[in-house]
Length: 321
Image (cartoon, rainbow, N blue to C red; front, side):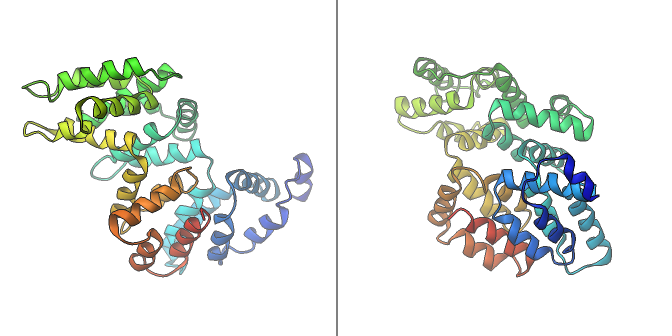
């Protein structure tokens, strides 16, 4: 195996990889080390580990999770899960989170899918779809279209998929004002129910930055947030789904603070690894404290039992300071 190292550039992570290889019964220490590594460093560690030992580090972590479940090891399966997600590059991670969202036992987790399409650039979405196809041998767009039974979130996702394919670059104040007026006319300016076709057309033809400007213009013109118009008596499932999408577009820190609060007693690992390296993670933590009167760090310490998994979550928070 050692000669295999000669065929790739040396990244200087050989000693770390050997330490990882010899410490599978001490994953807690491994987690604390990896939590401080940058995305590029983690990728280099993964590549170097495979060059030395001939196996993928992420696959090894996933195998450890299965073994720990079967043997009831003291090592938390959740720690293996979050470590494997943390070691993936962004497109591959989003592909796995998307597939998991589509395979929920009872209800598809549409919010995770919407968050990916709102929070990522079009170039990233393309890479995510490629990773999805490579890993699962399926077409992501087709999996969305084939969801049964159809529902409002699915309609919105199809529109967002079309938006990313359009590759918009510039934003236009004029278009934003025109779209804001169209939204008013088809919403609170209309005595009947909201015209879904008009909303979906706008979502499918505008970039996320353009949509954000549109909702800003709506508030400027009509004196209140667009989401207020979605709270009418005649509001239904489509309006409820649209409200969530608009909140995610307009105020991500506030939106993700609420998501973290809602998932802290369940599966928080997906949103934590997805947001830990985002530019607004500090702002998310400030919003969390403003909304709930407690630091996110304290909430995790009080809610999640002590152990390796909690230590890793706290280490992810510490890296943003």
